[in-house]
Length: 420
Image: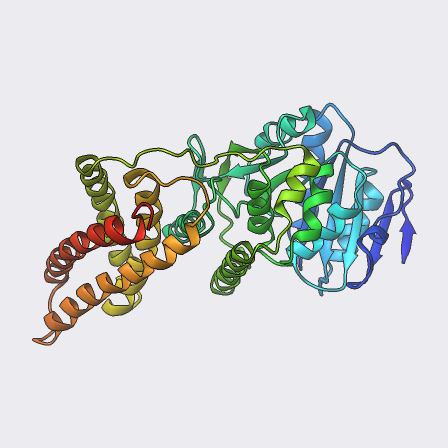
């Protein structure tokens, strides 16, 4: 169903199974340079003030034509009605309605049908300071970069949020670095942009329709040799966010596993995309002699100290809400993935994404031996009664020292051994 506002703004409603090209009619005015999409689901409280604030910023700051597209993901409250009111009030606002939920589904549909040169999106709560919008899209408009992301973890970013979300965000990015060998720093910040010609090539390959959409798009772009521009942002956490952290984290981990399998099987046409977009692969491994034993020991020790400190901090934070064994398992798993990735690159001089999945798998086997040592030590300690936290930390430090020696030997003589 297509309607037209008093300002000749086109408003769209699409079914979930409709072709993305049918999601947007051809606008009567000249095509905009920038299309900023705001995906929403039941955001009747924040939508109006968000759109008006964004429009005022674009009107006063952006020197080229722009559009604001509200992508309604099957809202059940007054969100869609408010969106239509805004489209009638502001000429640059359009509305797309989808019958199914999913941020990724909404972005894929709107971006696939947009006639703008640069496609962006941001969260409705505007947690990211809008001052980062021009630095985000400028490299794309100039043609210097292919994608751009706002990063809360890049140097220079200023972030206000609770320790729980901070730890989850950093752990997720460590997992991505360890499993998919990513080089970008923040996969989930709701502040991103992409050139339309690049989106046309990548979007058909993105399977996820939810929160993993961002990560999948970025990983595909990196594997295709595309340039991703990162902008450190000022970001303030929304305490009223409706995001289900557990469900989102579970879906993200499933997405990581799916992409790891796809790359291992070679089912994604990365080479074809690289050829079509005229890009050469970046970060290809350079053959060379691995570092000598003394250098390996020093680097391994430095990484080990950092991993142990990170492990202890994670254990203490997780111990507040869970048992000692579970806290030990989670803390050791997350730091083990990061430890394997760091040792792969810096200690043993292995670069590039080739073999990264196998190295992580074998690293998890080594992790299992470390888990047996630490868990066994904890079990032995608890068998004599309920010890204090200080005693737990002492036992864990000693067990980790033994596990560290074993890890180095297995890394050097098995996991990262040259010419296995």
